[in-house]
Length: 235
Image 1 (cartoon, one colour):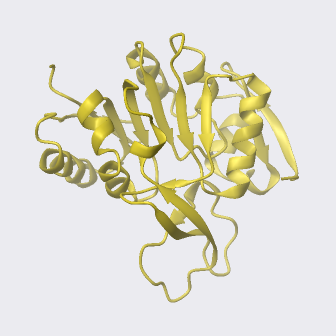
Image 2: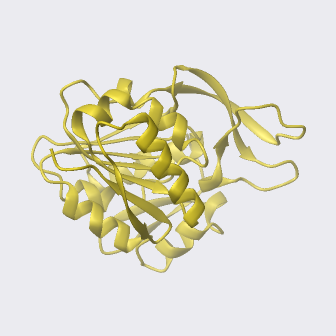
Image 3: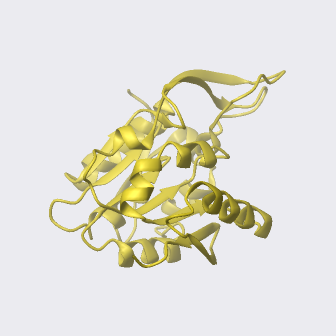
C-alpha cells in the first residue's frame, strides 16, 4: 500500500506515521520524540523473561521496537492489526527497525473465526485510526467500514509457545479476544494487560477472568496509565 507518511523517532526506534493519522494522540507523542505509555512499556519489558509477547491491535507498531529489543533469543512478538492502513504502517515500522522477531497478521481477534465489519470512521467523521473497532451489532449509521478476517489468538500462537505477556487494546472487543485465547491463557498464565481506564472497567475484567479462568487465579494488581494489570497466582 502506498500512502503519505512521515518517519518519527524516539529512544527505542523509528516509526512510520501515516499523514492521515497525524492528529491522533500516539502520532503526536511520537512526533515529539517521546514514548507513548512509557510506564506500561517498561513493565512489559521487565516481565518478558524467556517468553513470547502477544500484543495488539498493533496500530502503527508503536510498541514494537521497545518490546522486540528485549526479547530472549528464539522468542517472538506476535501481533495483529485489521485496519489496512495501520497494518501497512506497522509493517514499515518493522522494516525500519529490522525487527526479525516480530510476527504481524492483518486480522482481528475474537472468540471464533469468521468475518466482521471494522468501523474505520463514524458517519461524517475522519478516519478513526487507533480507535477503529469491530461492530458486533447493526448500527444505524456505521460510517466507513471494511470487512475483516477474525481469528482466535489460539490460532495465531502455536501450541507449545510460552507467552509471558498478553496485551490487548481492541476497542471493547477484549472479552471475545480473551475467550479465543483459552489454551494460551491456561497453558502459559501470562501477565494480562487490558485497556481499562475506569475502576468499573477493571472490576469487570477481574470478574470476567475469574469466571472464565478460575484455575489460573488472576488477580487485579491495579491500574497503570490507561491499563489494568492482572497477574496469575504462582504455580
